[in-house]
Structures are given as C-alpha cells and as structure tokens.
Length: 96
Figure 1 (cartoon, helix red, strand yellow):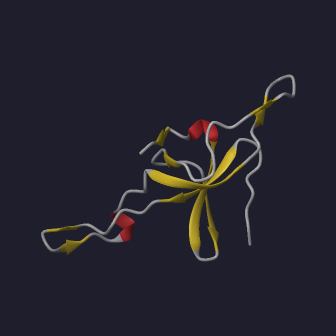
Figure 2 (spheres, rainbow, N blue to C red):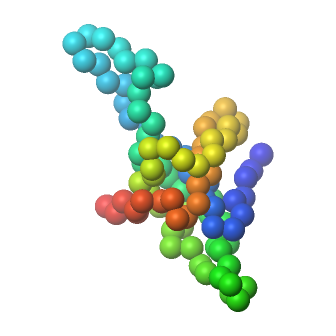
Figure 3 (tube, rainbow, N blue to C red):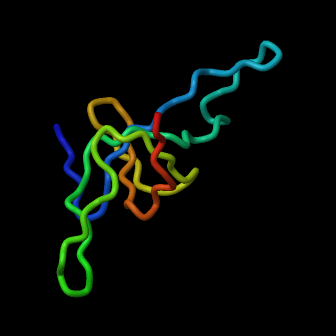
C-alpha cells in the first residue's frame, strides 16, 4: 500500500530516539515525548494561490525535518507509523 499526500501535505516517518534509562529505570513509551524529527517519505504537489497558480513545495522526499511536538495526522501503514503534516507546520529542514 502507498500514500501520496495531496496539496501542501507531506508524509513523514518520525525518527525515534533510542530508549533512555535514568538510574536503572526504563521509561515507558507512554511517558516519552513525541519525536521532533522526521524523514519525508512523500510530498504533495503544492498549494494554490488565490489565482489558481501552483506554489511549489520547499521540501522534498528524503529531507530530514523538525516537526512540532503536536500536530498532523497519525497514519499506520504496513505496521509502521507515519504523520501527515502541512508544509506550513514544518519548523525547519535539518542539513548535514
């Protein structure tokens, strides 16, 4: 199965942090914060302005991005979790 985002939306695979232990205590998944980074898996065509002209996306497939802590729509596909977010909600692109 494959998802192709529409408009100015992107499909993001959240990058999970490694499990952290403090003082020998394992922190459960429910207490961990949501990931703030993600890798773009698919990109929509872009959004249209008031005249109907297509505004191209600033991000592309494969970009590593910063996401807001909350937002977007969670989607499960082939036992993997993804998020669909609008380009406007992306906080930045992480460059190496």
